[in-house]
Image (cartoon, rainbow, N blue to C red):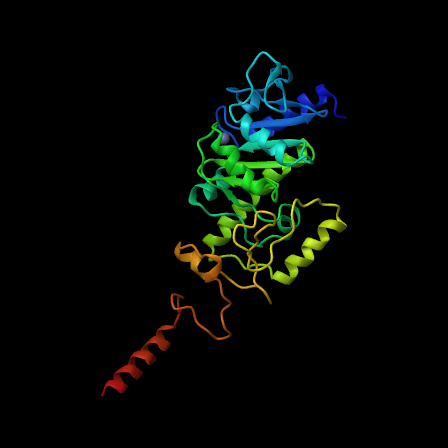
Length: 291
Ligand SMILES: [Zn+2]
């Protein structure tokens, strides 16, 4: 069912879920769907997404000109228009500020590590579009760089954006991004993620076809070419998983710093636990050597 009234009702429902899950506060966030070949149904500006009614929506053309509705369209309309311009396959766009994913966006950390099979299969990697003043033409420009190869991205110091073949597909990607961000945060607090091996990532990529998941772009060659916006950069080690040890101390590791630990190699920072007896023996030994 994609009648106008059912699309309006779906937008109300997605807005309600976003607000209930804390993805938006106050009047934040916005939602749009394509209706037919040249119309968009969009949330209006300055309303709480948790308490919308179907009659509040705006109808615009693909250039954002309002055709119908008592209220003005979302202040982030330009960003939505850019997504539809770049991606004819996209029929819905969702923007919100889910707190954990937005925390990664604020910290400048993309969600691009191969950690969860379902994320690799569905979204691939989630890059960060560089900071731009909300509601200006800078924001669509920042989004343009990534939207061809990604269905979801973080917006630096702002929030997250997802796109899909229908509204619920776009919304579920927002849920996946926030869920993934929470899991990544916990894993990093616990000492860092074990990454999925490159070979497995490529297998998962092939599974996309089997499950009928349409990925916007393939995974980039490893290492990726500079500024290649036609593929997805995913951090995954060749020849087996490994742990990113540096996250435990709060420092960020860039892809170049990742390396596998050799068997038997000790982390210089790692904690060593000794019994009292072992410690005493070590001290006695050291004293004997001094003499
Ligand atoms: Zn926003």
